[in-house]
Length: 435
Ligand code: LLP
Image (cartoon, rainbow, N blue to C red; front, side, top):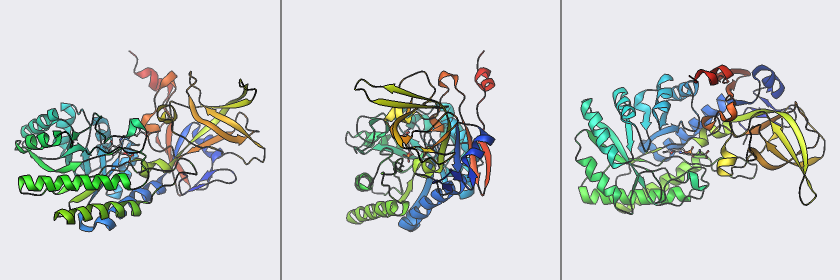
């Protein structure tokens, strides 16, 4: 839940800097990212992939949609891992951070021709093809550039991942990829084979996000290896790559039980190897794309309390509303997915009794809730600081300007030093777009 440099218990601190000091220096709301923790998590996935798959380990592509900015792209470059981009914007950030295009994998279910041409011109390693139109578009752009582009086909293996409906991506009724069950995957393969400017390297799937346990990933491994065997039987050659996506769950609450990278990769490797042996197939190179599991736990959001209000409910009980200076514009996940978070009083300790409270933002709607129900010290007053952990993934990256609230800054903390890596938006920034 909290990153490794954070200490809770008395006043919250990260790498020795107290919450009060952070609020004074950087204002609120602010996302604080623990740089050492980010690097350690990224490396842990990389090491786990290598250990489990040996010479068949592909690349860990950090899913930059979870959170990216130029400085984080520089960290990815330093770490020598890959990056998954799903739009031209994410690709621009990766390139601005100096990431070698050979480490970039391009996603998206509706890539524009400009995005495809840009990707090919900078020389990205792999484009993951998502539709029949795209087979032609990528082939045409590659031919125009005089290149043969490596591609994977994104397939839907028909897996019902146990997560929120909006973030499950591999059952049949989705906009992504080509279905194995309906035969669409087969039609796409045949079409790719006809294009001399495309080299089909293998298949990709991303089954969903915030998935706990190994089972869905093991089923994916089985379905994909079975499909690779079918391909071999049909075309008398083997495809060398699989990319099995991201989706590994993290703890948002104390009670969430997560898997460690090593166990997750071992389970995946065991499944891939077992099924390859059964089909007498060479083990393919396996890549993964964790986003949330790398960046999620590395950040917390620091808010300042602005108002505290008790309301009487119909049954005569009271509910305390604690309003902070952010809300659904910096964390849309509770309203969008019913996501649950926790918080702690960060600027002091309190021995006051706890009272059932609702943590809300400053936006003009009732659904602007960060935490629906949580017991918090009853002496919380305006000016107190609250820290919400595990906001690194899909927090700042899904932030909006709703109510013309400027988006928060992101501050990186390492070795007792804090520095802004994404500055806070200003009112001038907001007005700058208006003609
Ligand atoms: N690869 C692909 C192709 C993806 O579409 C995604 C996430 C990932 C990798 C990374 O998944 P992760 O390891 O982060 O779970 N906004 C939602 C999550 C949407 C995920 C979209 N795709 C949320 O806040 O929960």
